[in-house]
Length: 337
Image (cartoon, rainbow, N blue to C red; front, side):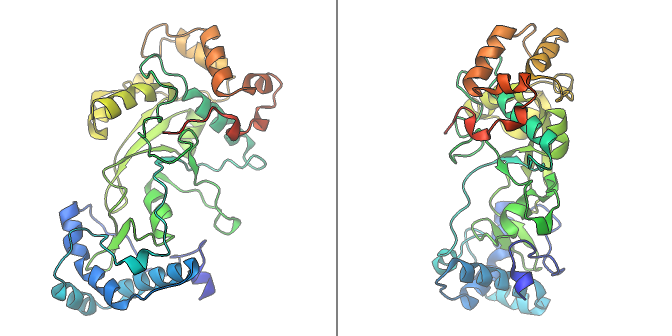
């Protein structure tokens, strides 16, 4: 039982805990979840520690998922209904702090000892986000809460560094389960009358994800998820094209389907794979020479040196010595939304 309840494995080994197959709108979610919410009210009890709270939340999920359909229908038919699929009693949430609102994620493993090349690529990637082509007048594309309001919005949440016992890379389609199902986060997840898991918080938002292929090719995936955790829509952007993307999203209110369809942040030919093994100034200069900036002829070496020295002091010197793996993410220019 202890292994099942462990943070690193749950809900592995419980095949009945599965995601819902289809994407539901908020009204459908509330209707589907009303029996589950009544069940939680009947079965939950106050807890005194974080561990007890986690244990109870997981046990409730497992009991509902493994119950008979007749059992679940009995709750569904008796429930008066709720306005939200996550309308849980306060006692269930008392030992559960909401996850920080951060939608900038790195899924690729970047441990410096094991994945030094990936770490170097990540450092370079994050520095390139400070390059804007004059489309974004602020320091960083995420400094107006476009990727959430958590502090240090310039550094992604690192999901690619799991405990050794679960050393598997999180993929794009597994983001919401990794963030919300494993910790049984009732601020975000709910369950249907079929006993399946749905996500009531996370869909309809734009997530900014560096997955392993994106890290290797220098492209950020902008993705919107459905309530079943599946990818609804995604599009790729080079780091320096995020400024224009955020201008249209944050200032003009464009949603991700509009951004992807209209080519905001550049059509595909402006967001092709980059050679992330090039020194950073060579990477920028080759982009200019190939006319692949949104503004033809944008930038020059002096401008890029100034931007890099301001946003990542000491990086160029380390790179010139072949020691860029020693650069610390904490040394990037701090950006708080």
